[in-house]
Image (cartoon, rainbow, N blue to C red; front, side, top):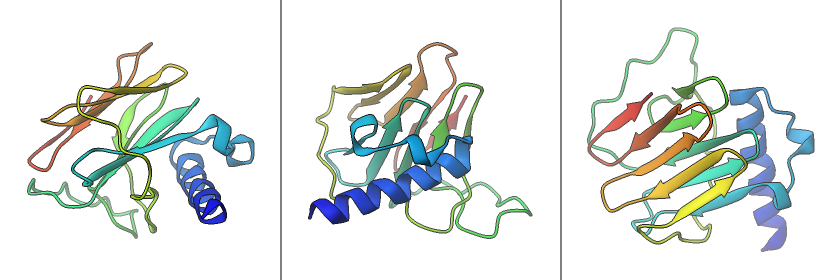
Length: 142
């Protein structure tokens, strides 16, 4: 089980690296936090350089896929120092068997804070104010 967890962390670290330009070689299990909301529908990965969340099922209208995206689009969101964005991906970055974070709780890694509420999951860079909210019915990137 530990090997599967570390493999998932390594895969998610690669997504973080591709999304944010973070050196995945420096990311290890001790510097990353991964969790799932109580609904099991949203999972997130936080590291000292950013946060990435994925939603499994949603009813919002997916944004139009950019021409340069040859993977899935509209279900993975990320925030780093400079900006938040929707991320193109070709694999699933989140292990949905991760620990559950209860409603009303927060997870923090460096400047990045994710809050789980009954309405949505929000991740934000506490220094810049950039972030996103995702829920089954809507998403916001700011």
